[in-house]
Image 1 (cartoon, rainbow, N blue to C red):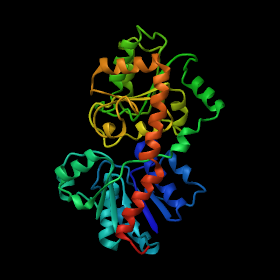
Image 2: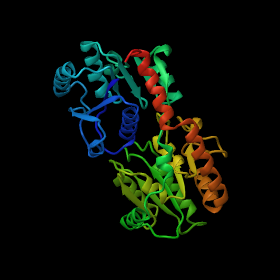
Image 3: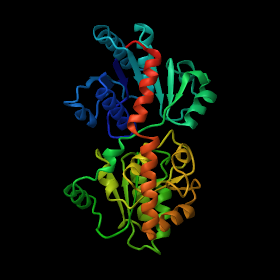
Image 4: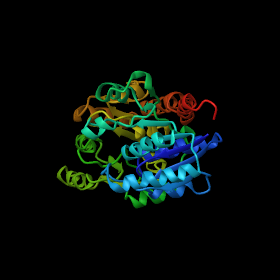
Length: 371
């Protein structure tokens, strides 16, 4: 089967990691895979994999710009020369382009919705949800039905998946030592970590984590915080560390290509999102690495974590509850190890890359049974 994926960019981030993992899985199954994107640091990871990359100006917030439609025109010509069996789009501009190409070239089109979107006029008039639409979680599935009136029969619920064995394999000690030095992370201190884009609006809740750590300092004065990710909110968060007198214990790693490295340096993973996310890929990556996780009880997290069995759930924006859960796990290594092992097994059983690839491949087969 010839599969063409569309995504805005291949910069470091959750959607890019998802698209690449899915592309690699499909390539291993013998499919011909092409990625269309605006480029990015992760394009180099495609070298030697047999996966093609076509550059197109999809990394824009102006979804109806002339350059987007010119890109659709040029991609149509290319697909006429190199026909595809399935078009699969993951981001808004990619969905617009794939929808247009699908109608023009009569190629089946699948859309994955990774999150929640306001039904603005553009999305109402051109939702571009595909002949079949993949929702990455039950809340996203409900959002598609209620906000965009996508018929239930056209939605397929397929949670994100990760390569558990990859995350379970620890990085080289030399990589860890270099990272510890680069991020000025002292040895012998308990480390609370979190990952995600430092996005405007504070959806990831990093400021909530900082407030919780301030409360931890009385009982755990040596505790350290490692925040992995980049974005426009970094300056605000750095100011918060100063205001809370945490400058000496909070370390910003920036964007990291191999997230196994910072994960290996963490004792507990915090996922204090402020309101529901589409899924939360970073959460299952941390659990796959065997890290005990504390997450806000919102979005997909309650479907991933069974409280006190495979991790800990705390109320949204409850600084005291978050601090208490982190304190208990840092002071009780046996419980932390138990939850870490159980969380890893939970991801292996329900959120593996192969399970996700099986389900996505089944969606393709619904539309192209003979390919």
